[in-house]
Image 1 (cartoon, rainbow, N blue to C red):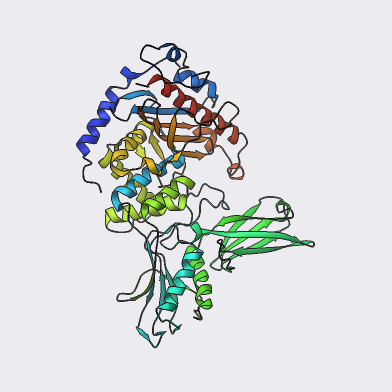
Image 2: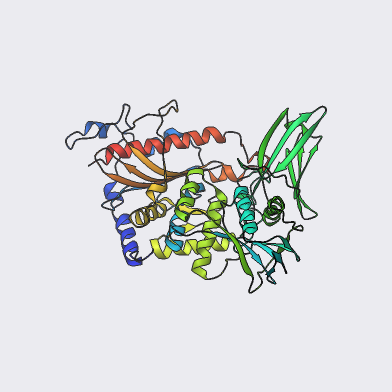
Length: 504
């Protein structure tokens, strides 16, 4: 997939972009009315545009906030406008666009993850003479329905019982108990990462009032199935705060929740810290429905040589997985596909998420000519990640014609001053958004009415304000929502400015 991407060409392109930065910079600026294509002799609309600096000032993001952006003509490579383009800022989920490019380049769009059922000791008259192993292949999209299908395939292969242990293996990828340790422990978007994942490593917690107490359920639900699980437990405790606590107790995920936060009833997804046990318990349930009794699962760190493949469950092609990842911004998917790509490059499993991200950084420098890139994960969840707007824009520009990334990106909705959707806006934007507390990013492509295509990256961040947040405020910090709205308004204002200033 990667032939045709030359380091010399990319570095040369980056240098050309940097050298042309100031020659293309404009100080005029944002339409007060609906945008229209600009004729060659019509300079009035351009003269009425607010400058980038004026738009930044109007956003009121804070004295310590930084804004970095870069926009180029996709066809010519000319850098049209920039602001602090080589300042490294947290990209948040915009990093997933780089991860998607990395995975497509290294693994290919048709790559599939494979989950397997293995048997040792041979199978005689339907009886596995040794151990049965649920072996993960790193699939981030494996769900309860997939395990049900895998159990049915095992039955169809003739297995009726197992003499030995039921083992689970997640060593296809490095294990991490959570994606980012700086996140609150109960948020579902920072689960464990493993080579054996299930339901994005989230467990469904549901509660309802029953007299003076509550009935609680923990299950691995999908639309078709709702198997209860025991590896994760929940106790309702008489307190107000904290709302949730987590403990690794007796090899299980042990949760408590504050009674005062529950109301009459509700549900939410909680992160799973022991994904192998989670998948093993759910598979055990479906094996039982097929008439196959399995003992409680035993995690193993290595696969035995010569084990027989009994059944397999393949994921969708990578291009489909990445489309959904960019649409729904699933952090587990980004980490799994990023680590799978690093594993392919290195020829071995990287030891940690950070080590895998370092390999992606090296890829970005080698293949794209990136300079200011220092990501600590593949999802952008870690606030310590840094990348410059110029590098992000250059990455998108480079992979656009080679990897068909643009069709994977979501259309970006343009809104009016009241945040209402503008139907049939003349600018068509396909981009990846990114949001952390007091961090907002946007990067992608803009199609102008005259056929001009722009490629851009915008990062806004108040790192000091973000880092000052106590853990108790990190899920919904005071002022975070309004700050994010102002950052998104700034991003749209810049895009609308560019739509006027840089039409042919």
